[in-house]
Length: 411
Image (tube, rainbow, N blue to C red; front, side, top):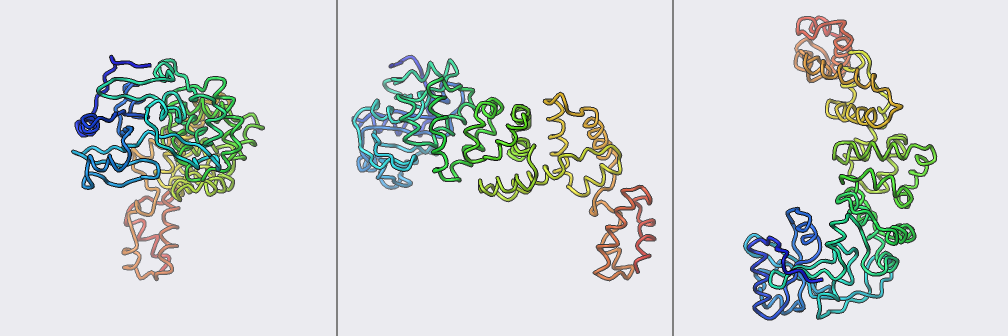
């Protein structure tokens, strides 16, 4: 389908690249995510251009000074001009997939439709040339309007070529609300075992993108079977009948990986979560935060002393995240003790408003005061921690005179 009425805003630098190609007799189609986003009213941030010009011709048109790097094997040249950057790629076809991910053979083509035929989903197989308009041979723009995710051509063939497309489809569902149509959905599930052959780094990247999506809850609820290829422990949550609750909580949480991973794994223990995140090669901070949340997931302080002790143990940032998790669960699970969570929040707010001492940094005395009293290095930490306990338990006030008197016992 050609559509000359659609006008896509194009940055000046990108437009210059298109004009240079056009002036020299070549097509200049913008393709993929930038066109999809423009059709959805989202400002694109990355631009890809495809053309029948081969890499050497592209480099000659823009000269080496504008070409940042080359990917000649796949026909790609990255061009930088006037604060804009785009990957310009020769039309190509792909075949001979042998590892459920990469083509064994790449051939250059002469027509944009040949290039679009190799792409994953119709919504990504839309091209736009500023001089000739929209080229949409697979009806991707209609699928965008209707919220449908549809594989290009034969779904089984597309996912058989590249299993990572399954997770990409789930990410597009989570981000844009594009629901896989029946044939695409069926092919995704049938090809899911091949995800075990995909590199863990690519799997983790797609999983993170999916969890950040507005429709993450719908994706989790629908595709526990696919997620289980890399996270088989999910089966335990499903068997307990807790997966739907899990999906709802994830979808209702703040859009942060720490919170959403914590809620996705909430019904497992901290040790199991640590194993999963190591398997996925997550960063250390994410893993440690999630494990901390799960170690304390049953903590719901009902007194100020309990709240202050927990804040001392976790630190303020993690305590706030734990409170958020408990509030999210209380809002999405009718079986949760919402009153207890409300009490937790009220105590936290009161603690902050009154600036109550919960950590060593907030004590009215410190290491220098202890040294001045004559305490030895090995005793200072013990004495200050004991003093903090007394303050948290409200047995002594957080005042320098009272704390100094307390520390003198350790001299």
